[in-house]
Image (cartoon, rainbow, N blue to C red; front, side, top):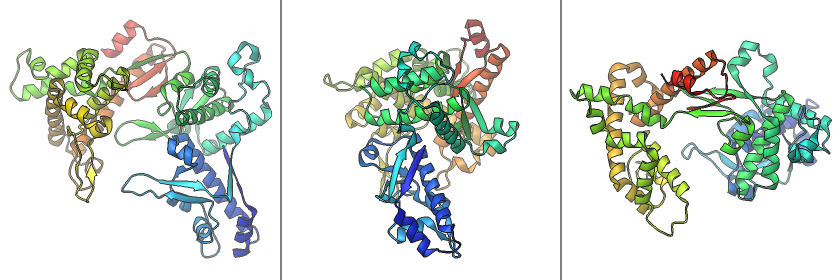
Length: 479
């Protein structure tokens, strides 16, 4: 939780400008400060960029701050606007955002506002409930001098901030609004200690982001007896996301620390395997029915699905030819995988950008992934990749045509259109695949639950269980 201390002259000026009612100035400023504290906390949860950490700036929507920051006086003057006009603003704009860039503003607190991270006044890790013998947990010995009463009060205040509306919900409403995430408190506390003292290979920006998220999760789990509530944010494209920190948006190491001892299962090459499900139907419509026609027509895609490691190594060696290439083979493979996934979702196979019609340039997703132009050209010239792109285009055209002809209700959805009103092939695929993915994962959850395996967490096409499924149950789910 963040606390902002405001220079007394701000309140004095506000009282002078709005003397009546007597306490209106104090209440208005207090509301504005609470909103600013909450927005800064939310910004920290999403992670700050390295340049923001260096410059002391935050990502924050100034229009939202103005709207939520309250009004004062008979003329309903916005507090945010009044502070700015009277050179008493608490947050100044460093880089203004816009709808064109899709970025909110970067702001910096002025000298009139002093920010304190209450969770960092003492050691940011917190005493762990239920542990009586701290000596048996070496990573937790730094908790010995903590004040349990103070920790509990801060944890409760954080929960009230995050779940202030929970008290007014029925049990059914709460179940609809939140997913419960069980947290391994000891594991998470150990991770925080490691991050603070031993994670010397992690950049400062990543470390601050991970620490901020881990503190929040641990504080809530302490107050809620080992549980963390994830507020659902359903997407019209079929997936369920969460507001704020969740199991979905933390790094892999932190995710492991949160869940502790568990088993993870995910769909192998998910989107590409899903699209291949249409291959036989596509060929049937062309009048091709030979038994080997799918393998003949979709040789590259099947090569990727059946032996992805070999596919990746072949492409990587063709793309990254410099013997002095500074990046590791693991990172190069990661880039190739990102590029293949982007193509499977309809990214343009372009080695450079193109005019956007407004005097600017639009870049293909491949340009953002493979930033080296020579490597990008070699990637697109590779025979495996060329075959993969051709096959993906065939499947894309068939799937979009099928939706246009058989599901006009989906094809007419506004969310699938560009700003110019044209149906976007990439958006159609991005709509269909997550809905299919959700249906498949619902089957996994349902069948596993019938055999006493309750999912403890979900990350789109990945699912986590406390106990292993076993070969027979896994086979039954796949069937």
